[in-house]
Length: 119
Image (tube, rainbow, N blue to C red):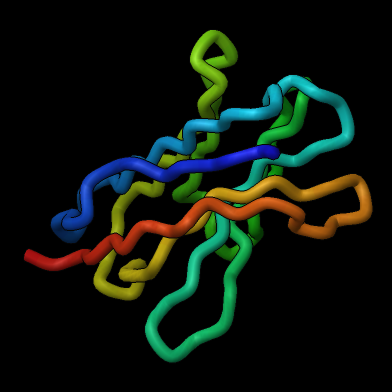
């Protein structure tokens, strides 16, 4: 059973960088054919895919967020990290880490963490 757990600050000031870490247990982030993803849901909106890092360490980002997004990993800790720069209140959301399969289906989710952007 794969488990994912997000961690990081719940409050970020405008113009700063949001940084969240996802710790994975029960499976390795270097296993082929899985895409370790970040997804968010803003108040009153649907799910928004942010990006992923794959087993080889390659990354892919949503075009709308690409200029502000970086996803990295620490294989020794089985963790991957999201950094979103120059945040505004529009980036306030519940942020989820998740595992997507080769078929682009999310089969495991973290519980989600609320991040509020406010001064």
